[in-house]
Amino acid sequence: MQRCELHPISIKLIKQGHPWVTLDSYSRRFPVTDLFVTGVDPRKQAVATLLHDPQHKTVRGRVWSQDPQWSEKNFLNDLEVRLLQAIKKREELASPGLRENKYWCFGEADFLPGLFLLQLKDQMIIQLYTSWWFKFEDTLIDLILKHSSFKKENLWLQVRGDEKNQTPPEPLLGPKREMNFALSENGFNIYARLGVAYDYGLYTDMAALRTNMKSLMAESPRVLNLYSYTGAFSLYALALDATEVVSVDLSGKYLEWLEENLKLNSFKGTHQSLKMATAEALKKLCKEGRQFDLIICDPPSSSSDGQKKSSALQSYEEMWPDFQKLLAPKGRILSFLNTHTVTMPKFESVLKGLESNKLKMQKKYFLQDDCPAIKGFPEGNYLKGILWQ
Image 1 (cartoon, rainbow, N blue to C red):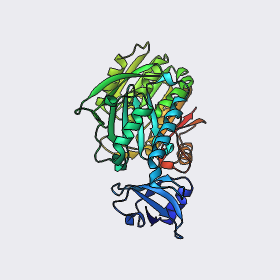
Image 2 (image 1 turned 30 degrees about the vertical axis):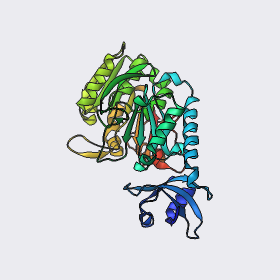
Image 3 (image 1 turned 90 degrees about the vertical axis):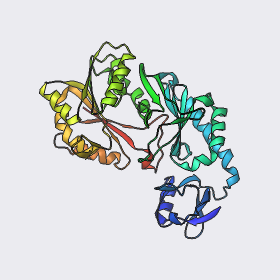
Image 4 (image 1 turned 45 degrees about the horizontal axis):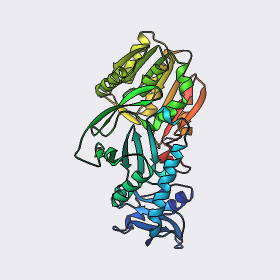
């Protein structure tokens, strides 16, 4: 392996646990054709062996080993050991029967950088955040089949992380096809769709959080779900006997999907969908004098209502006065942020600093269970939530 000097900041970050070497004046000089490179410091001492991806626009190297004696001949054994450890870790998680969707491998957190394995019922999506893994695609598939109960005809492959080319997952066997099937999570049923679009209908990285929010949801008979997508939180609330749920989203496609999800279930409570911008929906509900015991807000990191573009933090600043008008006595707000560019302390500080925020922070939420995070890697710890009362 060629030895390539790393930027001093890259060396510092790797020693703190960060698994990436990004594009800079040093990594730009990495050899184009090498699968692995040894990153070294100015004294030519090995810092880490990197999976080298010269095609990635941002991440040129992903840390595979910090052992200075590591050799390329160890790779296949390492791959199998790490994959098996990731799978066993998920098998040991509590209450595995509660949901039919989970991650069996979560990339850098399982020391398998850029590789994610997502289960949707009896289907598995192999999600690649770097084209580097294509060089070992057959080996990887053989190991998945060896150490899991999935069949090859149920495996799908999807390249992720490319904002310009967001393509659906494709089946490993046979021609391109589409699948629409129901799976269960925490007592409700929801449709997943494969081969149709980049997304598949639910956020599995939030599934463990939903599981651990059971008592909160059960204590909230009236729920407002903002930026509802296909309605996982709405369905969960109704499954826990909520009497009234309102879902708000600007996308008619996702609200139609939500209506199909509702028909999969038998709920006693009432549900209302509002197809409009969140700010508009809040004004409408305030004018109607509505009250909610729980308001769930999970805005995209940046969004547009068709007229202006705003960040999630800007959205919270604008929405919070209406939140408090809509909140019932002893009601609670569950605020989420999905971006690594804003840390939890910053998120907390901004919301605490809102002049209109008269609530107290009760609890913080992070990725957990099958979606772990690792120290020193803020990009992998993107999801954060705060409960207010």
